[in-house]
Every structure is written in C-alpha cells, then in structure tokens.
Amino acid sequence: MSRMIRKFLAVLACATGWAVAAQEFSGLARLDVEASGITDKGRSVVVDLKLSQGVPYRAFTLDAPRRLVLDFREVDWGDMAPRELDQSERVSNVRVGGFRPGWSRMVVDLEGPYLMQTTALNVDAESGAAALEVVLRQGEAEEFAARSGTPAMSGWDLPEDGKPAVIKPRQRGEGPLRVVLDPGHGGIDPGAEKAGAVEKNLMLSFARELKETLIRAGGFEVILTREDDSFVSLERRVAIAHQVNGDILISLHADAVTEGQATGVTAYVLSESASDKASAALAERHDRSDILAGIDLHGTDDVVADVLIDLARQETQPRATLLSEALILGIGEYDLPVNSRPIRSAGFSVLKSPDIPSVLLELGFLSSPRDLENLKDAAWRNDLAQGITDALKAWSIADAAAADLVRQ
Image 1 (cartoon, rainbow, N blue to C red):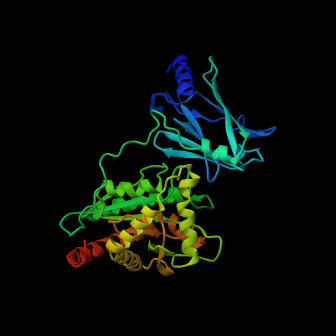
Image 2: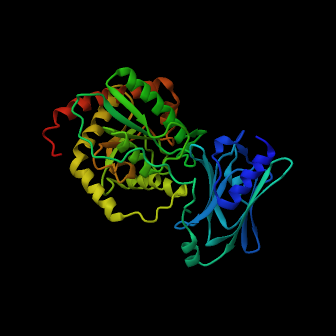
Image 3: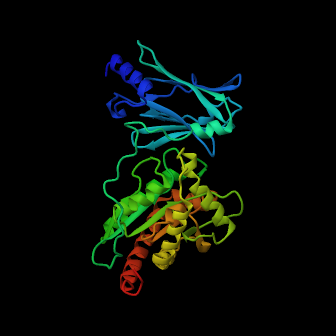
C-alpha cells in the first residue's frame, strides 16, 4: 500500500473516527515504546503514542471508574509492559491488548475527571509514521460523567448477531451434546499471572485440547466462546452459548489467590450469594474484567439481572448442580487433585443463563506451585480432559433420563 493511501486513511480516521478495516493495511502498526509516553503537563495529562504507520482510531472516556479508552484498527503492542508508558501522577494504570479480532485497545485509568481537550493524529508524509496525541484537561466530575460514554460511530459498531437467542428444549440424548467451552479472560484482560504463566493463554490452550478430546470421543459438538487472544465481554459469552443453541456452558479458569492456600479443581454453580468469602472475592475479580477492558456498564438493569438469576435457579439450578457433581467425580476418577470443598456457589455473571446449565471450573490456582506445574504438564491436562469427557457422558445420560421429571 502506498504512503499516500496510508496518509489518506489516517486523515479520514482523524476527521470521522472511521475508515476501512485494518486488514486493508499491508501490516500492523507497531508502537515505538521508547518514543511514546503518558506525562503531566501543567494541569493536563498528555498521551503521546508514536506508531509505525497511521491507523483508524477513536478516543473516548468512560465513568465509574474514570478512564480514557483508545481503540485502533489495529496495533501490534509487541512485548511492551504498559507501565513503561506511564510517567503521569494522574494515571493509575495502563492496559493494552486485543479487544476482539481486528481491534486493539488501550485503557488509561484516570485519577480524576480529566476531559479530552484535543485529539490529533499526525502522519509523516515521507515515512508514513504517525504520532497520536491526546490532551486531557482537569474538569468537574459532573461534566466528565456527562461527556463520557461509547460514541456511536459508523464502522465501529458491534457486529449484529447472526440470529436471536431463543429458549431451546433441553437435551434428551437424541443427538450430540452441544458443549460451549468458555476460555476465561482474553485480549486486554490477561487474568491471573504467575511465574510467566498467564491465565488467558493457559485456558485457551486447554479449551482447544478439551475440544479435541470431546470430538474424538464422539457424541459431542463443541463451540469455543473465543478462538484466539481476543477480549469477549461476559454478556457476549452467554449470548454466544444461546446463539449456538448450547446444551451446557463450561467456563474455564485458573485464578491466583493472595490469601490462604487454595489448591485443586473447584466447580462453581450460580448463587445469588456466594457460599463463602473466597467465592465472593473470586466472583468480583472475574466480573470486573468488563470494567477493566473499558466496557461501558451504564444502563445495566439490576432488576432484569435479578429475574435472570431467579429463572436460572428455577429452571437449571438442579441440572447445573448435577453437572458440577459429575465433573468433580469424573476428574477425581483420574486421581487428579480437587479442592477440599470442590463444589461451591458464587454470583458469576457468566453463569446467569436462564436456560443453559452452566458451571465455572477453576482448574487449579496459579498461586499454588503444584497446580501451576500440573497446568503446564501435557499428560496431566490430558487426564483432566478425559475426566471431564467421562463426566459429560454420564451427565448427559442422567439428564436425558430426568427430562420428563423436571418442570420446563
């Protein structure tokens, strides 16, 4: 692609907030970390990013918590540690990563109500390199809240769903069991990190391995909520399960705890109140991922959420509980370590589907050296996948037999 076309696309992005999709560029823009930075200037915060080429972008702020969001189509962040950019006392944290395929996102956490004053992307006519500068000025909380929100821009909207979610009849063993595997975290949300291991990567790898094991066993169809290192919102994960008419949803995680010595596989089912303080803290960390990724949660209807929880309890709670018990039994049959209290309850958002039995599996804890070594061990993961497969076969038979006994 010629420099002229790159420059034209960059100018169009500056003027309208929209341009052709990132795949039309000859390569991803790369961030020059050493030449970039986030600094204080007087009473303002200046975000200065040096890119190898101009790309379409948009910038906006979100409230509660206050943050600046920068979306790009698309930037290669490389091995950059986001904190390398931050020299500002008015910024508490910076995160970068994939937001979804073809999109990159930077989220800058602000210590106060700093309003966007100017935003400019300048492209060098000779080299094609670009410099993005965003200046934020100190303002009032009310004005910040009023001016915050995800902008409606042509070309940046979420893709339309292929088909509406529908309430599906429960499985009766007459066809393959449709299993939706949800590798936790992804993209800008890495999850737990320990000794070089990153939860989002471990869970995606295991989800792929488990999918292969299930398919080889026969009698299963398997869908992943994410196939790569992309961010998927909690709401979207549940929506995917509905759109593909999933029979069950299993969300895969491997958290790390700062207090206590949690170890072993743990299965969580939905509850309005957590079964213990540890479960409550875990749910808060998992559900905060949407906020950390810059999702605007305003407009969330707590009444609707409460109704969904009630429906889930009435229609699927017994089935989900049986599923969690089967999973723990199946895993235990392979002499794999399970938690001393292997079945717990928590208010995880990803479990709130009203008609799909859903379980969140903590495959171990990265804060446990033993669990971490297990998760890195291919043979151990193979046994885990076999245990889960056996459990799902047994659950499917029992659930189908009870289909006429449970109120639909």
